[in-house]
Image (cartoon, rainbow, N blue to C red; front, side, top):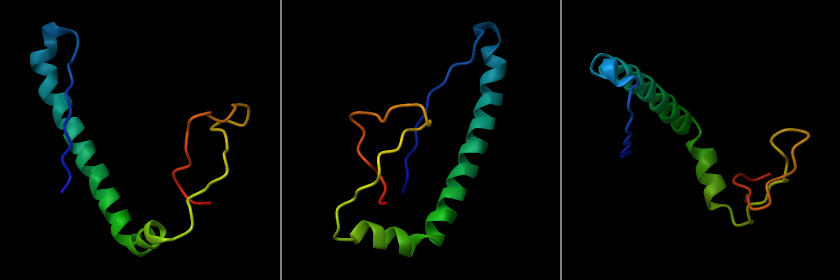
Length: 82
């Protein structure tokens, strides 16, 4: 089960009563679509994800900057195996 909470406010406040339901509908629709795509991806890749999670070797990845000219983040730990 996944619990996802969010809060938003539409500006200007004079039209918030009209815009918030519309923005909420768009946000919910997009979020449901993204979670369905994530669910399909994880279902298709379940064996690979399980193998990665249960592997005995330590997780290390080369430290590469987000942009070729940007230095690596000094406190960021690698999240994915090499």
